[in-house]
Length: 100
Image (cartoon, rainbow, N blue to C red):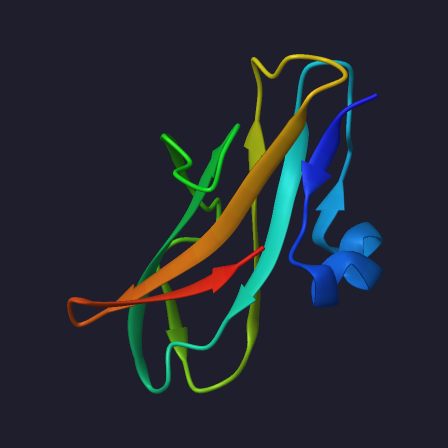
C-alpha cells in the first residue's frame, strides 16, 4: 500500500487528488488558476514536508482565468511508505502553492 499524506482538511479529497496508485508509483492530481497569465506547474513530493523531489505537471504551462486540472505521474516510490506532496503554480515569477 502506498500512502500519500494530506493536509487534514484535504484528506476527504484524497480520492480526487491521487489516482492510479501502484506498488511503486502514483499519479498526482491538483488544480491551478493562472489568473489570466501563463503558469508553470510542478508537484513537489517526498518523505517529509521538505519534499526533495519535483516533477513538472503534464499540462504545464497552463493559461487562462479558470481553474485547470493538472497531473503528473511519479515512479520509484517505496511501498508501505507515507509521501507528502504539493502542487506549485508559478505565474510571472510568483509561486503559489497548495500544500497537501
